Image 1 (cartoon, helix red, strand yellow):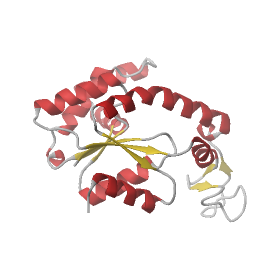
Image 2 (cartoon, rainbow, N blue to C red):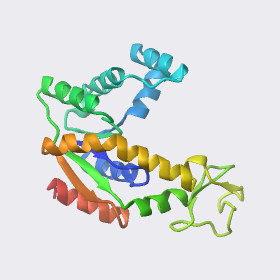
Image 3 (tube, one colour):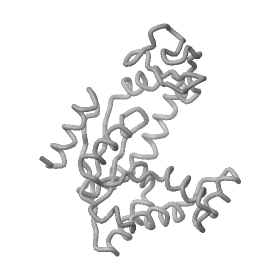
Image 4 (cartoon, rainbow, N blue to C red):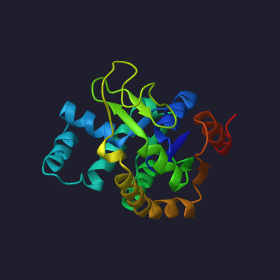
Length: 215
């Protein structure tokens, strides 16, 4: 099973990726993880990526694509993989297609998890984190017993700047603009599968399984 997972911040991609990984016994591949790993290990690609990041620049499409292509050649990808956060652009999508074709592989599905914007904003803007132990809470889904105080260690809860309402709205707008062309691309290639991302994680997971035609 070779899958790409697409979804806006707050759509629950991470949770679904972990569940799919367990169900199909395939690796979840994140470009963020690949970059951190390559930099930590000091690989040639990692050194190149670090030079761009240290200069405050975006890592070029070709470099990211090369990292993903290298990762897909590992033994644990023989039976499939789950790409999370890649591709992000049409250029990356086309390069991925060429790389897979060169190794006689092809994508099975591109899953787009869709959640109404208002719900995404509520999910993201309601998150709070403990300054001391890092425990996470949510005003609606998992509130602390005492407002502003961590259940685990009694530490102060705070809201990250990325989770403030105005920042959340801006993040979602950027996502919509940048992802729209990618969704069109995979729809034209008859790979796109849209999944309703509302409800409990297990409900969403069952929708994904039905969409994939897996039993």
